[in-house]
Image 1 (cartoon, rainbow, N blue to C red):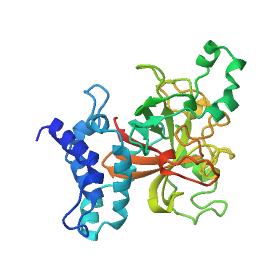
Image 2 (image 1 turned 180 degrees about the vertical axis):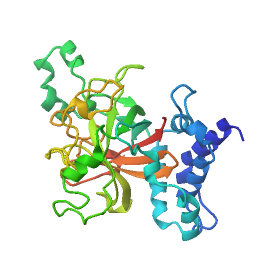
Image 3 (image 1 turned 30 degrees about the vertical axis):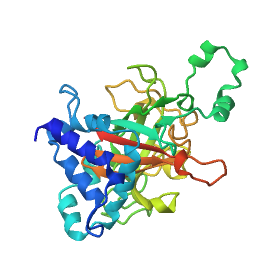
Image 4 (image 1 turned 90 degrees about the vertical axis):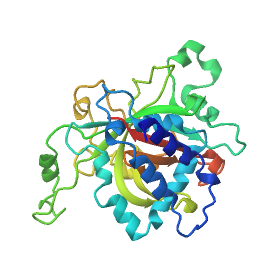
Length: 334
């Protein structure tokens, strides 16, 4: 099969996941079938140096119909019930860390897509949270239209199936020296002598769309990646494999100063060279632009492809309704 056919096969399967009625439900695992279809796409088509044409996973996201990201999120939960044979087949030679940078200054680029699940089937949109917008920008009479245009916010746009870019990176510098100074590897009682250093922290910058091909390059929306099996706020969704922690989340270390457990993005020199990075401003961008909360959740969907859920609170505190959730997927581009 040619690459276009492989992409169409994977996308078509994801689009109809909620309609499938397997003959043997006990033996059927939707995660396994999604993974194997994505894995058939040649790696050279999945990862690009930026010179080649758009790689397969971003093209895969383009092929998905509205509502498919919710299907993919639900299917990814089946990874937790994979039998041993299938689990070894998929993961014996692969790791989540293969998809993320591991060296200081290294950057991996992902293309993303998000959509809000609509119960009425009218289409996936991200809608204006009017109360929050007015709280941040003031009432409409407080500023002219041009002033509001000059101060766009992640909560102030409304468009179907929004695309975004996510850049994962390890801050530059000598991570081993910083970790040892903070007590890892035998100092200050944090670890036993000779114990391996923890992996370097992986951060991410979220770049939202603005108008047409333009993006919101000026927004310093940063978060920290945490690879950890954790429960989601909704029990029916079981768990997640990864967390995107924004500065307001206590586990992000936003209140600390550097070190293995602290928020490392304190100044522009903490960002990799060679790109235009807005200076970190944790106070101004302390929450997720998708959920409005301090963290979002992700699961593995396939090689270089991850699916997530941004849980937005409903009308009452602690209430999470499916119609308020924003589903998203990211696919490695370079």
